[in-house]
Amino acid sequence: MTSTTERVATAWPDVDTVPASRLRGVPVRLLFPRAVRRLPLTVELPDGRLLGTGGPVMRVRRPEAFYRRVGASGLIGFGEAYMARDWEADDLPAVLTVMAERLTTLIPPGLQRLRRLAVRGVPRDELGGQESVRRNVSRHYDLSNELFAEFLDETMTYSSALFEGPASWETLAGAQRAKIDRLLDQVGAGPGTRLLEIGTGWGELALRAASRGARVTSVTLSREQRALAVARVADAGLSDRVEILLADYREVDGSYDAIVSVEMVEAVGARYWPVYFRVLEELLAPGGRIAIQAITMPHDRMRATLNTHTWVQKYIFPGGMLPSVTAIEENLGGLRITRRLSLRDDYAETLRLWRERYLERVHAVGALGFDEVFHRMWTLYLAYSEAGFRSRYLDVWQFTLGRQS
Image (tube, rainbow, N blue to C red; front, side, top):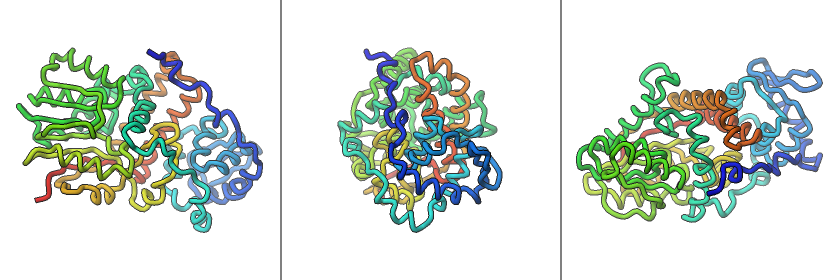
């Protein structure tokens, strides 16, 4: 088996090297002060100048490198500039929340129309075919079970919790179980239910469904996740009720009374959303129900970024694409939404707790073989995600689905 140190890149070519062309940075050098001058931020430059109207502090330590990176790669360059320490923030989620709240107005309208000429398209090998999905999933979820264990709670649940009161580390495991239980309630999971889970995670949902008496088939493309989930099921004495397969959702057959899929549709790829929902419909037994949990973005922003390669895709979730609620509704085929619940505020709190726990455990993460650039990348990813929900740019929904009558 490959070691964690070998699996994690120690060479970051696009972080280590500043784009050579000074011309790339000229537009950003001119536009950046204009873009931030009315924001409730304090932007500190090395020469002592302060930009913005006051608020969370962003320190641009290496302006020329920052301008060139953003000029060359847009938001990818913005993220790489943070990874390279070109800029810093004491309260990273707060800075990113201010920007996310004004994402559509930071760039002048005239330049926004030229956006498609500058941004990069999604690489063909990340577009969502079965082999590319296997590679994409492995790049994130097979990093290391030990890494995820450092910042997730005891349930090893990597999706939004559902809090019934104030959120704290002490309440997180219970809130994750509450989220899972609501999904299982929505599909009527109980004794004898034939339940399919698409996207195993580390097994908590399968365990809770089986403890209700359901017979569970769960599929994942992550070898690391499957290994730990199988071990957890065995330790709980539920191996006779749970089968965990290393398989793509398109490879599943059979008929199921209940189907549950938590934050999986985001990894499918936009061109495969119709396939995903058609597979769910084909696998659902008559009278059965489906519950999915899905992160969504505004429909107009989804359309604008549909073929754009983003920082998150490059470094965190290759091939990922967040749908809009409209996109989900348009791709349901013969299914319909019967109930829906937003967990937006719950996800912001879930991410806050993960980020704080990760920062507390950063030395343990380093001992696993993850370097400083990875640490800054992961910190930015968690803060960036939290900011998306706090700014209300992102949402996350539990949808209950049934067949159209």
